[in-house]
Amino acid sequence: MTSTTTTPRSATGAVALRGVTKVYGRGDGTVLALDGVSLDVSPGEFVCLVGASGCGKSTLLNLVAGLDRVSGGEIALGPGVNPGLMFQESALFPWLTVEGNVEVPLKLRGLSRARRRERVAELLRTVHLADFGRKRPHELSGGMRQRVALARTLALETPVLLMDEPFGALDAMTRDILHDELERIWSERQLTVLFVTHNVREAARLADRIILLSSRPGRIIWSTRVDVPRPRRIDSPEVAAIAAEVTDRLREEVGRHGR
Ligand code: ADP
Ligand code: MG
Image 1 (cartoon, rainbow, N blue to C red):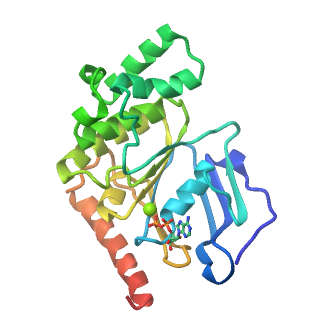
Image 2: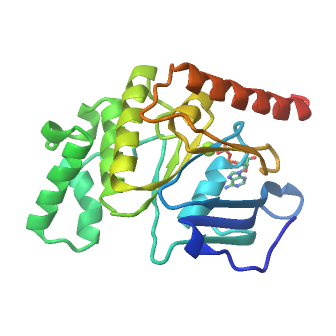
């Protein structure tokens, strides 16, 4: 197990991990989920974390989000940064309208009613749901619900988005549209995104940098920069070539584990 006493240089990056280790459980039943993970995400960078199921991707994101504590090492965020977290399920409040859901973080932030109304309208325009504010979550498609979840996360006004397979449950066409929208919003708002997926094409479509995690324990085993110009298409030869390279590395990794 790795641990470190050096303080991460949070000033240099939006998110900094130094020798992060996570152990679940006690005694005989312990699981070493992450082992000595160090990673710097630059402000404005879009980083995709890929790896087989169970390799510790969600664990890493939850630690960065502050939902759980590291067992060793350190995580630093920019001063005052409270990252927004988005999951595969939209986790909307079913009893609230779309507007009501997006308004929740604005209420928590103490915005006036007039200001909230303005911001909700603006955020719904951003995710192309301007005409759906009065609907309830069950009246929307899965893709629309994820857009609402994105608008609600954007309402936090945080510069750092943590996304845990946010489009994993969507059909390919809807996912494609949401990739375009996320890329636009990321670029307009100069967000820093740490995006987890097991879909290598999605990673190649979105990322500035792809990080590959090994399984049991989760360690960073490989990374690559994606220098394909934006906006990208998921079916472009350049994106396919990067995806193929990542797949090869993943295969090697799974092969090493004899599965
Ligand atoms: P991924 O998101 O890459 O699929 P996870 O981070 O969910 O992986 O899980 C990594 C490992 O840690 C897995 O072996 C999983 O079973 C284990 N794990 C995750 N959460 C817990 C928990 N709360 N208690 C015990 N083990 C856990
Ligand atoms: Mg997961």
